[in-house]
Image 1 (spheres, rainbow, N blue to C red):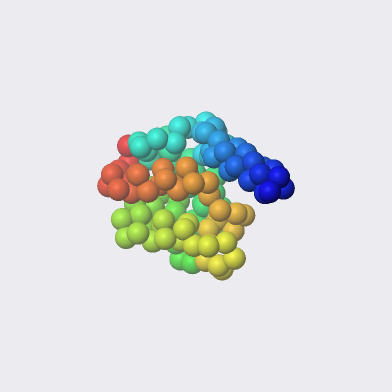
Image 2 (image 1 turned 90 degrees about the vertical axis):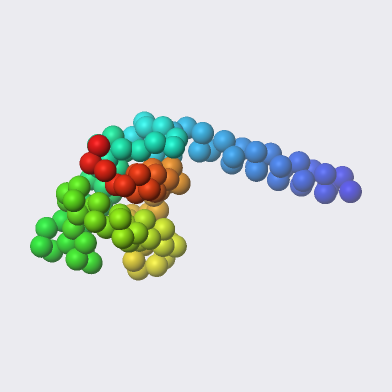
Length: 122
């Protein structure tokens, strides 16, 4: 019974500690922005797209034929749902983006909030 108590206590401590992992917005989003219910193109989405997507998704040779080098192109993709759908794919899926690893939960939330707000160029 004592062993169970020790294991339970350790498990509870790990769960509580992992719950705090995403409290730091810079860890979450990587730009120092906050992970709240607002998102704009210029402050939140464009820097993320520039840093994580445009390297492969620009110009005539854009990977998958998806050019994300302008607001109009990103907006078009976002309004059809394909942008967040590709980002949401599970790791190991050949279409998972970015190939360097999954975006943070906060970055995905920012994109989702921006899309739901009409994907405006604000």
